Amino acid sequence: MKFDKIDLKILNALQKDARISNARLAEKVSLSESACLSRVKKLQSQKWIAGYSASLNLTKLRHVHFLVNVSLVSQDPKVNREFKQAIGAMPQVIRCYKISGEYDYILEFLCVDAAQFNRLSEGLLEQELGIEKMHSQLVIEDSKPFTGLPLDELFEFDDD
Image (tube, rainbow, N blue to C red; front, side, top):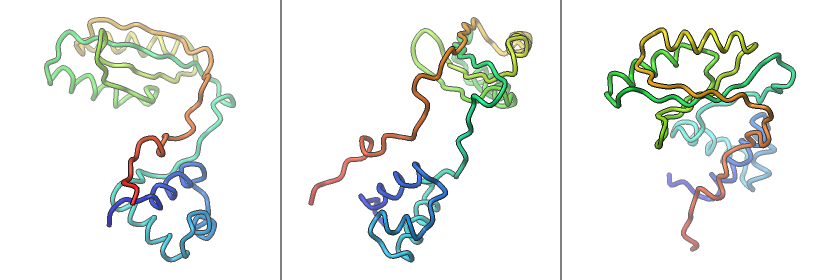
């Protein structure tokens, strides 16, 4: 089945409220309940939907939030693989992006305090993972929290 505007409406609705009932979702996208459920299952099986989760209120948690730019000594695949394995084993690293430009990666750390962040970043350097330099920045405010992907902008459909 080809991805269409109804699938896009379903994804937008689920992105806004992953707990929406199938009946309400079907009503929102103008489908029968069985057709809607079939579409959702298709989107899941085709991996358009990676999973469902709750968005937590970070202000309720004791935390410090850091962004860390990392440069590696080399672009050797082994160096990159070892670095990513080490980062993958750290639950405090909540995001890791490989980027272009002066740095190779941007890491997002969520720690209980600055001392924990310091221990973790020093631990990374001690592991001899090929880190050439690290530049850390404390996040003061989340000025635009994630509210979902801009799906309407990311899809183009032929107007029939």
